[in-house]
Image (tube, rainbow, N blue to C red; front, side):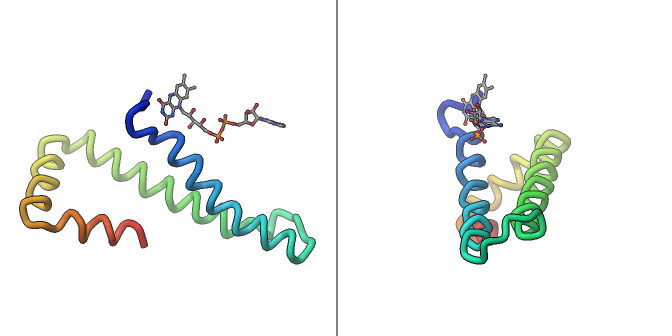
Amino acid sequence: MDPIFSTGVSIALNNARFASADILQAVEIGEFGKAGFQRFEQTLRWETSNRYKFISVYYRLNVLFTAFVRNLVSMGGAQVAARGCLR
Ligand SMILES: Cc1cc2nc3c(=O)[nH]c(=O)nc-3n(C[C@H](O)[C@H](O)[C@H](O)COP(=O)(O)OP(=O)(O)OC[C@H]3O[C@@H](n4cnc5c(N)ncnc54)[C@H](O)[C@@H]3O)c2cc1C
């Protein structure tokens, strides 16, 4: 449950954004086979894998992870790190 930040809904909407690119291309060329959706599948696998690693690190190294994030914030690096993740 995450009614405040709505992580589940955010992920669903963001994945819909990724899917829309392949859907639009499929409509444009009139080809709706599996091959046309490989970019979407790869993006989702990559995203899920990164998310899983991030969560695993958090639960395995909870104390260190918190110290790391605090250190980043105190160095003003959180924005830099966030920008890197958004690329
Ligand atoms: C109990 C519970 C609490 C949650 N709480 C939160 C929360 O607090 N915050 C948060 O961010 N997320 C929460 N989530 C997760 C969030 O609901 C999901 O991440 C989000 O709804 C996923 O959206 P979606 O569009 O991918 O799938 P869904 O919302 O499941 O939509 C899929 C739709 O497709 C329809 N469908 C399925 N198969 C077919 C078919 N063959 N033909 C036609 N239609 C079909 C279904 O009926 C459904 O309406 C919660 C989930 C649950 C179960």
